[in-house]
Image (cartoon, rainbow, N blue to C red; front, top):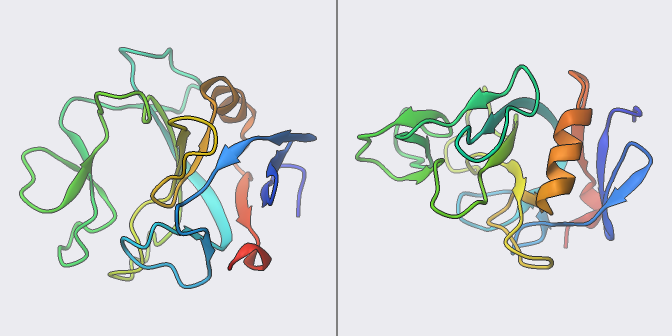
Length: 169
């Protein structure tokens, strides 16, 4: 492990000498992630990108990409665009990135099941804002909004999300 790593623990995410409260998937941690299981996948995941809502937050870092109206994420395991950002109109199963709520105002992308996609092994695992403390995600890792912003600004190109297999139930 390196000082740049974010490490999930039973009590939060350890990063830059701090413990950051977070929530994970309703399915807990899994070493056998599948689409729709609600689990946070065990493993070492690179941070591959950052998205933000420019109408709600200032660009957190120069390399962050704005979320535009019509930006979606394909979660249709039977389609060639599975686990990729796509644009509306998109008739296949997807998740809106430009949401009415504030969950995706700032999103850190991981390399879970990407760029080599295995259909059915789960689409994107994001780091994003939580609904409220203790409320689980669909498999992502979620934080208090001000903590997420501080984490986003502290990332380096070497930062990885480490989800230990030992946390799997």
